[in-house]
Amino acid sequence: MRFYADKTSLTLTSPSVDATIAIGDAIGRHATKGLVVALCGSLGMGKTHLTKGIARGLGVAGWQRVHSPTFTLLTIHRDGRLPLYHMDFYRLESASQMPPEMIEAIESGEGVCVIEWADRFARGIPENAARLNVLIEDSGGDNRRLALSGAGYDTAALFATLRAK
Image (cartoon, rainbow, N blue to C red):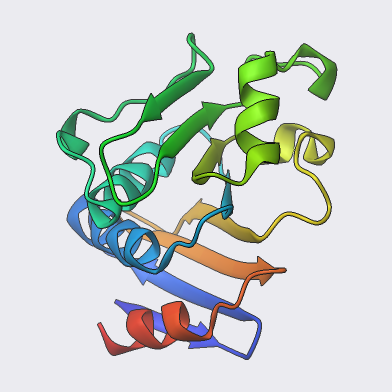
């Protein structure tokens, strides 16, 4: 895994699905109550694999079976260190189409919200939310470039862990 970093951002290259899951695991281990992880990237870039890793890092039993909630919009995993609210904005046209359960999960701050396709409409995420933005892009073959940045979330310990891998 290669990386580039400054104080507020970190860019990693993941050579495999397993490495992407390991990055997610580190995010899950460092996640705090109320964190919103905003995942962006085109189809097949590894957003759900990263989410599996986050689930593993949170201690979710059956993390290997985490799948994208494209049609259900929200899947809740309550058996980890913190609840994991896995959301998918792909099929939504606007924030007004968000089911009340999604809004409540984001606003309550009781767990960790992972949102696939978060770039579809940023207004679905409160401005004051502790947020980790992750952009995943193809960088040839199985390689993925992950650009991480924090907003209202202290990324120092997470970035130190990821640099050490």
